[in-house]
Image (tube, rainbow, N blue to C red):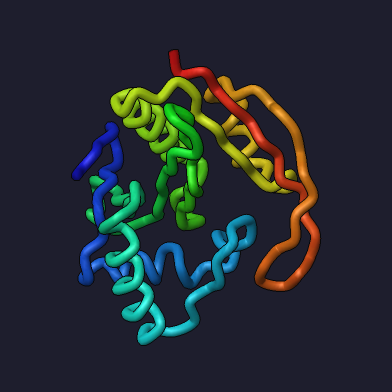
Length: 170
């Protein structure tokens, strides 16, 4: 399955994507900062990671994000149905060079349209309280704040606050 916006394509990963997703996203600490994955530190690790990504995407609504003009994998995203007709994003990650270009808005809009096509009536969004770009994205898309909860980063045990938002899709 392939989905498109003006500037982006969301589609399932293929092995050849390992180099661009590694360079643009997986090797970037600034992208991993507000996510729950570890930075990939070498090309061998990236080749292993792309194989795991391909296998994961086979049975999940998860995609790599490609920039149309360069053809490169510049991020990843996904959704999950948490309850009947209630969907939640599982992350929107973009390499640092691709933040601030409106790509997050395009991805979020496309994810919500996809959920509507599946019969979704509500879309949930969460972000670390310190992730100002993600909070601005939620606000710009009309999400309503619901609550916050204290969490622990599984990578290092450090506490953080996770903010939860929702939007009616009807």
